[in-house]
Amino acid sequence: MATMKSVRTGPVGEIEVVDVERPVPGPKDALLRIRACGICGTDTFFLHLGGTPMGPGGSMVPLPLGHEPAGEIVETGAEVTGLKVGDRVVVNPQGVPSGIIGCGGAHGAMSEYLLIENAEPGTNLGVFPNTVPFDVAALNEPMAVARHCVNRSGAGPTDKVVVFGAGPIGLGATIWLKLRGVQHVVVADVLPERLETALAVGADAVVNSATDDLTAVLTDLHGRAANALGQPRPGTDIYIDAAGAPAVFQATVDNARWGAKLVMVAVQKKSDAIDLGGMLRSELTLIASQGYPTEIFEVTPELVEHHERFAKLISHRVPFADVEHAFGLALTPGAAEKIVVTFDGQDTLDGRV
Image (tube, rainbow, N blue to C red):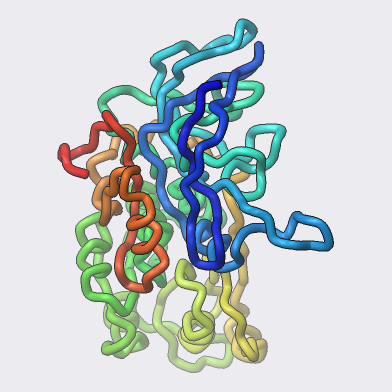
C-alpha cells in the first residue's frame, strides 16, 4: 500500500502530519501531486476548534486541511477527457462529491497527493501554463474570493473605493479593482508593512487607520459629499470590508455619503450593535460577498497574465518539511501575511522557498 503525508487538525491550536493511504483514482478521477498550497484563515479557524464537530454527539474529529492548492496531474482514469498527465492545474475545492476539499470534505490539499473525483476541466480543475510558478498559482482560490467581492460591488471606472484590510483578500480586491479600471482605490490598515504592499500592487493611496484621520484623508482624496441629511461626508462611493472588525463597519457608517455601498467579504467578528440609524441617513447599501459562485476559473487567465503582480501577496514560502512552522506563523497574529507551503521540486517566482 502506497502512503503519503497529509496535514490534519490535531489538539486545539495544533496540526498533525500523518501517513495515510495514497488515493487511487477511479475511471472518472484524476490524481494530483501537490506542488504548493496556501494557508487560509479558514484553516486557522478549524485549528482553533480542534477539528470539526462531526463525531458522535457532535464530538470533534480530525479534519484534513488545505483548500488552496496547485499541482500537476500524475494519473488519470480511463474516462477522463480534456486533461492529461503533466498538466499543471488549480482546483475548485467545492467541485467534488465527497465534500469541500480542506473544509469538511473527505480530502485535504495540504497533502503530497490529492484525489479529484469526477475530474473535469472548468468544473473542478483549471489548467495553467508553466510560465506561472506553482506558489503563485496557489493564489487562484483566494483571488476568486476577492474577485467575487469586486464583482458584487459593481465598481466602475469612475468610482472611488476604499478597501479596509490589506491581507490577501483585501490586496487581491485592490488588484482586481485596478485591473477593472477603477479610478481611485485607497487601502486602509494598521500595519505599515501591509500598506507598503498595497502600494506595490497598485493602490493609489493608503491610510493607517491607527494613526491617521480616516475622514480627513478620504475627504482630501475623494472630495466632499453629504449624506441624506446634508451632513458632510467624504465622496467615497464604495467601501470594502476585508478586515471584519466592528470598527470598520462603524467607520463606514460614519463616513458614508448618500447612496454609498458597503461590501462585506471578511468573516465578521461579533459586534454589540449596528448603527442602523446611520445607515438610514446615508441610504447605505449593505452587500454580502461569500465565496466564488462563478469566479474560481474566471480569474485564472488574468492570474496567469499578471502573475508577477499577484506574487507580491506572498510573504512566506515554507517547505512542506517545515509545515508545522508554517501553521505556527499563521496562528501568530501579525507574523505573516500570506503563507504558501511548497513541496519538493516546486518552482517559485524567485527561486526561493
